[in-house]
Image (cartoon, rainbow, N blue to C red):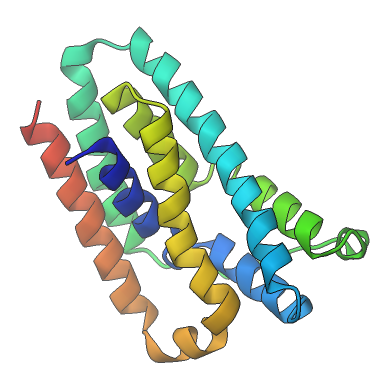
Length: 188
């Protein structure tokens, strides 16, 4: 599997049911007529955060023994797959009212960027960049994978969350992570 598609699948799975989806839903409710600005702000935040994660992973991967890297990445993916099965605690998303005065674009950019710091998708992006020793394809796959999860939330958030049970979402995410983990281990 190419690094682009591995990142797309892994980050997409990491974002299922994540707090970033709730932030997208909150922003869509707050700025219902500014969806374009929300998407642009979130995209800029995704490019920044996953670009940084890819660069860090690429250089950290140089420091690790290549023989063990595939096993470590595979094991971490399997652990993350099992962790996805555990429901996230209901988090109250604290937002500063001043942040909303900045407008849809800046609110989306800042909220997404801050919420992604050391998030599951950031860790996945770093691991994949280290594993594949690749920056751009991993970052691009991560951004597109995250976009495929978040953009529909902006347009159809309430409709989607009422029709797909979170248990199904978590099981799907678990299967994707464990599959990617096993692929990394057996390709070593």
